[in-house]
Every structure is written in structure tokens, then in C-alpha cells.
Length: 263
Image (cartoon, rainbow, N blue to C red; front, side, top):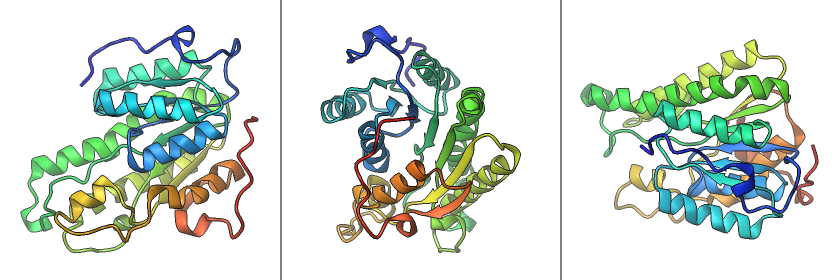
């Protein structure tokens, strides 16, 4: 955990803008994989970003790359553990320096105990940890950012999995936590009428999580995270209704035009 270090203020960021950005996104787990790919699309669309990950060096490297490739909107990197209340508070403060969050992407997560045990043998301490990371932490961060999201007519994007709806042997722990996240998202969508709430299954991707799920196996046949980003882009830019989506189903038949950095 990263302690209580203050996030950078607007004046400390790599930006020449004298005004607050039009839109701000908070993206958790943004140092690699799907989170980093989503952050890249968002910065290309003109969003200012608040990004987090547990590894400070990896997060800094991601921020530098995103800043170099983006149009110049601020990017604030706040390293830490999403289960730490002090870290979540730092993310909220960082978004506040940018005017408040318009989009929260709850991407950070854990596979849980690996190799994947059967439910009959699942260590309960590991299951509790998986619920803390994959359910409690995103719900807590959503609660903390809801005032700004409501005020700005924003959206919450939760990353889920087909393991939440299908019975795969060995995936009971991960499936249980993703099912809980889906139901929390479903209820939040019913309760909140000023924001969008999306829970999206990205499909099997070539990520560290999937590599950990299949130790020693070749997963190079899986799509890259970047391959499904057009689907996420269509969801976010089209501001589709709240609900559950599969990223592959959202990919447009024709390429999307470049994202327009407007509100």
C-alpha cells in the first residue's frame, strides 16, 4: 500500500492548459493489459486521467507512455492498493483537482487463488481476499465518486467476465466474485437515474490474469486488449443505456472515427 501521499495538484501535471479539462476518467489497474489499453483510448478521446496500479514503477512508465501519445490532457498517476481506503481517498482527491470524475473504470482485479482450486478445496481466506479486491473495493470507490458522477452526468464501467454467468470447473471463486460485481452493478443501475452503469465482459484476452489462470500454457491465440477497445469506445462515446455488454458484440462493423475531445 502507498500510504497517504498527496496526489499531484493540477499545477504539478504535464500540461500547458490553464483551464480544467472537459472530462476526467478514473481508471484502476491501468499499468498494463486492458486497463492500460482503455486509458490509451480515453486519453486519445481528450479525457484527463487519474490512473492507479500497485507497482509504482510500472504505473509511472504507463503514465509517461500515455502522456507522450496523447493530445496533452493531464494524467495523474496514484500508485497504491485499491483495497486501501486511504488510497481510494487519494484517487478521489486527484479527480477533484481535475474538476471531478465523469467516468470511473473499475478494472483492477485479481484472479484469486491460483492454480484455480475447486470450490470444495477453495481456501476461504483467499476467497475473502478476492471479494475484497473484486467487489468491495470497486463498490467503495464508486460510492466515493458518486457525488461527482451524479453532478456531471457520468458513468461507471465495471469489468466482468463470462465466468460470472457460466459454470466453469475451477473458476468458482473468480466466477463468484464477478457474479457479485455484476449484481451490484445491476442494482446500482436501477437506483441511479442520472448516470450510466455498464458491466462489460471483455472476453478471453492476452493478459497477465489469463496467463496466471493457465500457467505454462500458450495463450498467444487470445486477442490482445487493444483488439476489443473499439467495442469499449463505441459504448463510451455512444453513451449506451446501462446494462451488461460483451465487448466483442460492440465492435463496430466499420472503423470508428477518431475520438473527439468534446463534452
